[in-house]
Image 1 (cartoon, rainbow, N blue to C red):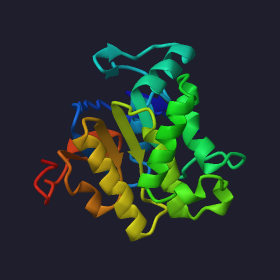
Image 2 (cartoon, helix red, strand yellow):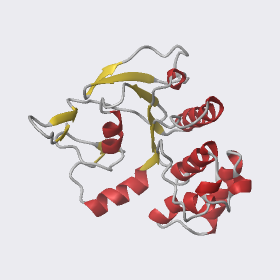
Image 3 (cartoon, rainbow, N blue to C red):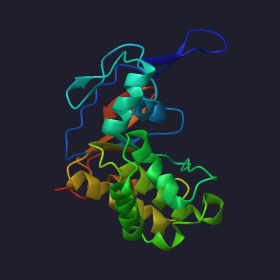
Image 4 (tube, helix red, strand yellow):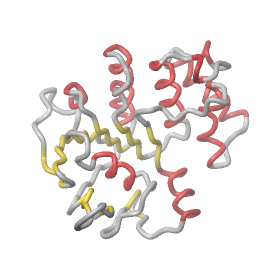
Length: 224
């Protein structure tokens, strides 16, 4: 459960009785309108916020109630986060933005640099490695942000409306990359408004007023 104070009246329950389990190698998609609690769900799963009640486990380890430093270490160990608004630092180059993920967990040496450049090449933005975010298109920024999210090969990958600021072509690139991470063994959770986000999903949910319900079946028949 996660609640926020309201200007007047009872607190608003952004998450209310949510029970979600995503195994390694599985892709779960959460659909729902703005304000229904999808982003709050990802913030709790990604250790950006603590639940007010209930337990959160990652890799079998209890994360609920950890202090800020311990939560930050666990986030670096377990979680990659793909944000709708990219959240790249404008003062850093594309390459250095990707390398930030390694620095958070003490992996900023030559191997991390090689891996970062390899990812940038895979997503077609290596030639932009020395450019800063304001010099990149939206699609290029999202691909750089995705490279940052997966640099450490996190076992959990979370994506908050990852295609919300992209055209159809760039949106498909990111959705396909998310599916590929699940196929490679990560537990992937995506919240999205795009109908094609559910293609290849192992589980689809709808969120309504903080509650998570089974959603429509995936027309693609599952990831595998």
